[in-house]
Image (cartoon, rainbow, N blue to C red; front, side, top):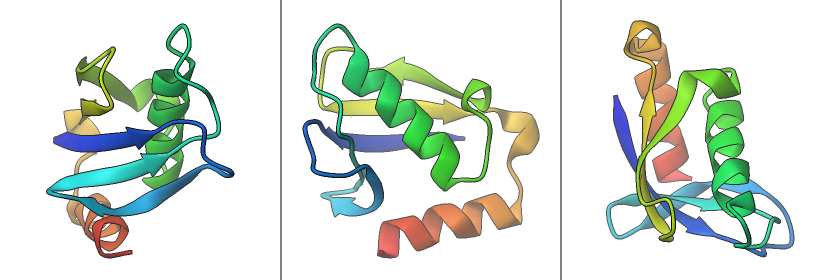
Length: 90
C-alpha cells in the first residue's frame, strides 16, 4: 500500500495526523539536512501504524516535502487501513 505524505521538518514535536490536501501530514523534529527529516518521517509513519521501521520504505520524494511511502504489502489488512484512516481524520 502506498501512502502520500507531507513532511513538516523542524516541528516542536513529532506527530502524524491530519491532511494537507490529500496527503497525510507528518511533522518531525529533525531538520531537513542530509535526509534526517526523511528518515524521521519514515520512522514516525511506521510507529503511527504500529509497524517496524523496516516495513515502511520511501518510493518518491527524497528531497521534497511531498513524499510517497510504501507499506510492506504482506502486512496490509483491514486494521492497518483503519489506523491509516484514523490518522487522516485526526
